[in-house]
Length: 225
Ligand code: AMP
Image (cartoon, rainbow, N blue to C red; front, side, top):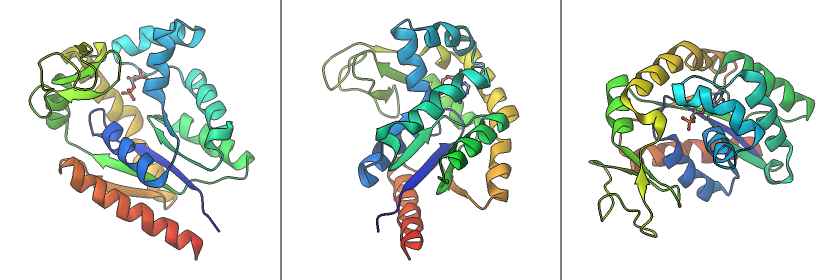
């Protein structure tokens, strides 16, 4: 029997969720659903969702729960996500967590685990302020920690690297405040449900990955027994 992995990644901005997600979706062949990427694509394509989301995102605030919840529940119901998923950036509030629980239950599905990657605020600030993203490939760099071969250019195709608007210093502080107020309570929420697995995000990406992969592999085995 193949068991389905329904996973959530949470953690402050800059915890390395995207980096880990890239590796884990490869390891376990899971579709990756990242709300931030969906919203940024919507803004780029100037869709109705993008128009609704932009002003919130630019300020480092959360998009209203009902707007994002609808998008995510739809994505989880798609053929792609039927055999498992890795969700990054959702839920971010308790009402979103409740809506997700209800949506999954209605479809007779359940979460396998919630992976929390912990990183202290000063490290988040250092990481986000140096983060640069390729306008074309979406590949992420850091000016000190993971610089591209040629300054300001993506290694893959030479496309331009830019700073996300919400990685500017004032917005980083705001996003951290929002994280502590709105998203951190989810750790308790999922702890009480026996789903939370914590990881130390200050370790190297490879170490964090090794730990998470081992945990997921164990969970899957337990599920198959
Ligand atoms: P991220 O790339 O995950 O850091 O998301 C960037 C921005 O998108 C956030 O600062 C929010 O404005 C918005 N966003 C992403 N996911 C959510 C969510 N689950 N609920 C509300 N807003 C979100």
